[in-house]
Length: 208
Image (cartoon, rainbow, N blue to C red):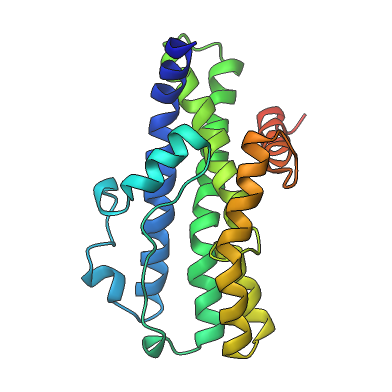
């Protein structure tokens, strides 16, 4: 069992690194394009995973099934339209994971369709990479702080700062409680796996 877990982590590792790195890079890129250079000045406008990976969050992903990267910072005073631009910066990360998921599952489909003879490990890297990136897409769009989906929703609601801060304070404990319950109590609260599976199946089948 230990060997199987190690092999799974080995094949999942490239997808995790790619997904987290591109996700945070796209946050930084969106902020820069919208007029704020904070992330670029902090060295986050790069595809170097070392600049984006949070060690503790990365360990949690490997062993607990959920985790986090270093959040990209931006200065709202540099944005021309704070509510709109905050939402655009937030959505840039999940959209990048969706695009990666489509690309990777397309590569898997090509291998199967054309019966390309590739190494089994490489095939699993592509396959798990698709699942991981679709998972990051769905998970980060949840409207629970501190996930990207909450920034998008808050931008649309325009709540008073004290109310928004109150929701943010309880968001992380609620999210952790849900994830722990799902992972260790075998309770399905957020059907992320089913949604991800449906996405992979949809793009794997393609147009008839």
